[in-house]
Length: 332
Image 1 (cartoon, one colour):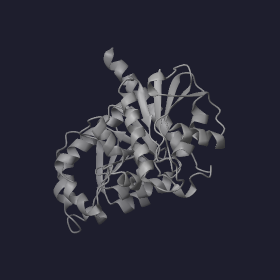
Image 2 (cartoon, rainbow, N blue to C red):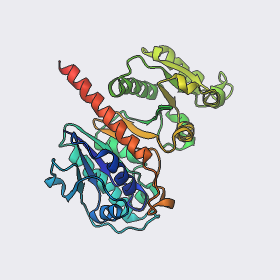
Image 3 (cartoon, helix red, strand yellow):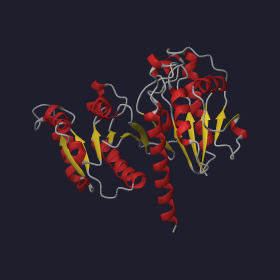
């Protein structure tokens, strides 16, 4: 049976709320098992606000009943301060991920869907990771990984992740391009069943460098690499990002590769703020999350939109099914 593990995220934000709302829509099928890693008092508070339409148990991870659709894995005692990041909320969100990881290592068909965390709360708790992506890469010992963003309107990937803008250019090397482009191809093939993809590459500089007049990374690194890359027939560009998005060229490609965080996230969130999904490529586990933050400003009001969390589950299910299908085909 496929198992989908949800983490609570920052308990002072909308994470627990959007998970419960999502479970109301997906937990009726008997063909899957859902675990929700969440302190008992936080879960009970949410289901008082949002009446659950699913059967559940509250238990410890060692006592999960596979016949009950949802098992709420209780851990720690949660002190909630709605709408604010705290040291405690940072620790709890981190612990929920570690518990999800430990459970996933004992299950052959599993995916993890993470609710939003607060990087400020993690810093207050002395948790030294820029975000989920880097933590999952370390937990699953992934040396080559990438942040993907998924939606019906546009799919995208990043070459650098949570990198300060002044440091991005120093990270754009032939070695980075080789590793990330190979990973992007493998991900499209194995996780999305796209064997002959069209992949757009954005330039780093304004006008994609204007042939070296406005920055030389494209002329000296990106273009020479693409010419020599054995699988360059799948890649197009580098494109000036303003014109690329302004003329909606992204509609012609399976994935758009950006050089840095905001180059992709700005247009992606403009198109998909309530439906976009974050996916970590390169892990042995399927991991997705909604493409938004903790929304502290509306936490505790019961008005959070769960659409992105719901899509995160749907993509996790799709990717997991594709991986299992590929594994069966290899075994034939």
